[in-house]
Image (cartoon, rainbow, N blue to C red; front, top):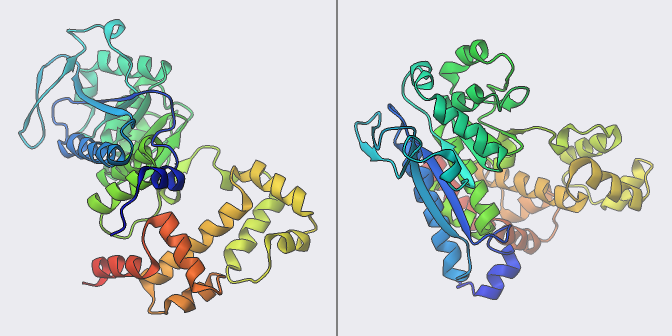
Length: 353
């Protein structure tokens, strides 16, 4: 296995974090009947991301995780595991607590209404932290804590499928998206399941510790074919719901003509646009460069063909518009850290073993 030095790591994947802060503070909320996996899994994944980043960059931000409860120092989870809170709101006022960067509100195994009724101070604290800049992640029925705070009013959200109807009745001001496993509205993420939470954690690891760390964690914790985070979420104001009808038409053409030999400049000309105007309008409408969008479409299509067909690597390269198999291989290694052959071996083993 090729060893990555610090310069190569930073050049290939960018800096290990997206801010100048030297620490990442994560609070995990615990309460009676909480699902322990919703607390332990994100901690283990975040620790793995930090460890990988520090292996190549000693200045990577330090991770601090703490369990927080409203009043009790010991909380019994659904599995009967006693969990000890590092922070209790009854013992420390909100004014004395450092505002965390991320707060994870896990799911609980029962109708959430009784627990919500007994945790009004916690709900108020969540709202106060969001107003001070915290990122909030609600999981399953834990999303109800965010809805109770009013932070989700007129915003999108998702929750566990079993409680969708009750959620609609209790929070009619929330734009519930039951068909999505993940929603993102500004600094609020909602996950419908534990797997969706894992995908959000990988996404956040990429933001704070870099793409290489996120890919390493994903391979170690979820060794199977998964849709990219961006494909699973409902993002308010996302680029594929823009108002530029001509750019949307070009996007559709690109998705259905992956193997074209035309350049983006030639495609723009087909639609009556200059290359300069096309480049500018595409970035304004979608938030990404046209070349980046085009390349990612081809890579995702190649991944699908590798997992679902027996076509050769060269045949797949041809189908997604790369006559040179080596070019596809280089893009795969840059984007996924794997060759097409290695990717196929990994997903075929999982899908067909």
